Image 1 (tube, rainbow, N blue to C red):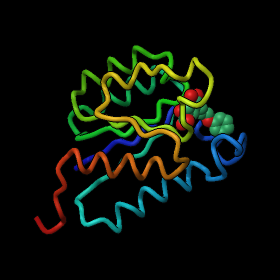
Image 2 (cartoon, rainbow, N blue to C red):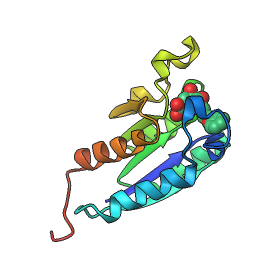
Image 3 (tube, rainbow, N blue to C red):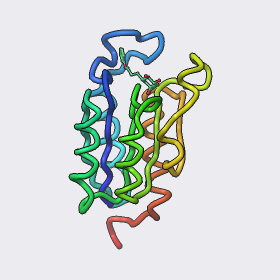
Image 4 (cartoon, protein in one colour):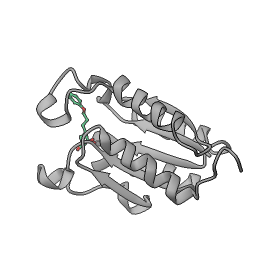
Length: 151
Ligand code: CA2
């Protein structure tokens, strides 16, 4: 199964700014943890991991992977709360979407409580720091119906 992992704006700064909110792990640390999880998993998973600070680029990335992708794991970052364009792109691809957030968006400012993405997501994981991504990936594998490397 081919899973696209998308990191939204400013997440390249992880570990370098605001560690009290987002933790000390860098984006590379998170990506390595995802790669390691896949390498040690019995499931036949291929990850493609991308980050963009630009809404239109995220829309294009989603569209460009329409033939390849079986599921999308996305942290849309601030676009979570603003982007109908990313929501529409995700619904157009019509594969399962898992939305992830490092912080618990419901325990933060009111404007973070609404997500334009959740309505087109199979589920949301929020608030477990870097481990959120592993939980989200496990959920995605579960949804896609795990195939082992032997099958
Ligand atoms: O908790 C999350 O994962 C968020 O998606 C992160 C977004 C925020 O706008 C969402 O409400 C919740 C912000 C990402 C910015 O990342 C930074 C990382 C380090 C330093 C500064 C920003």
